[in-house]
Length: 447
Image (cartoon, rainbow, N blue to C red; front, side):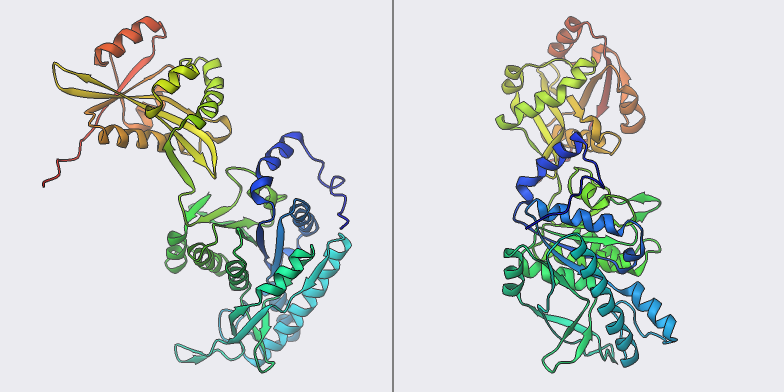
């Protein structure tokens, strides 16, 4: 199959290529269902978006395309002077609205086929959805609004095997041949569940922001809750994606992404970087802190080196890390180690006080200022409590303001250090600030 020459449009940068290649093995031969909102067709960047879809296919990712038509249906209804009962396939669709929808959806399918064919991407409109009328909901007949009953997995897999991208429309046909309106988000999710897709990617008219901040990730259960009870005004388009995205994750799709399609290269930036640029809905623990293993030692040494060079961390050898490996923890972001922390413990036989030391706190430079450091400190405090520590100390030459102002630590004298640690402190000559925090231990559990 011939592929378009994309280098003329988006000159590759070596760092971009390295980042992409890191993900290719885990994405190869996996199914991505990509749903594109209709309004994006009008954007100047739409051609570049389709080129990015071509990039995914060239990496042996099996792509299924779904498109929405809300914007086109609205425009055509205004042009013909028709009042719509629903424009997104979620409410009641009367005969006049269905007639508008059929015309707008069919016209859009033709334009999409033309654009993809111009990029030399083999595509086919698929009739893989068996649908039925939505029926009566809350006492209201939904008329020509449909619901998906079954997905013809075999026909979609045959197209994918032949390197043909299936395109699914936001409408279908029931057993009597009646045309019914569907919601494109629901189509994408039902198809993804049926194909056991690795991802659903909603390329939306806008990104998800709350209180002016991008929501980088959200658990499936929280996404569904937010869709039901939004904390602030959100477009119904985003509420739909939160709802169906949560359903997808809870039905076995590992990741769902909501990406702002108006951003240049947002699709690739979301998929091929740890932090992404959109919102990821996940069913499992996307950010995972786990005890370090021997396999993590090379990554720990690599991560620490920059801070060691900057005199922010004490140099540690491979042997020293292995010796106290049980004290080290690694934060992974989508399977990639990006940060670390260690919790050492010291007992004072004279007082019976156990002190913990928070050490080796490090976050990769590309992931700083995103809350990872604070999350690791909280984890270290919980770990110290679980190990019976009454207080936690930290030594810092450069980040002491972070501990004081953000985390509630107070500056102390070296006398606050346990005797063995104080001896090492004085021998190092680093003159680190000593910070301390009392830990409220949980009460003993009654038996």
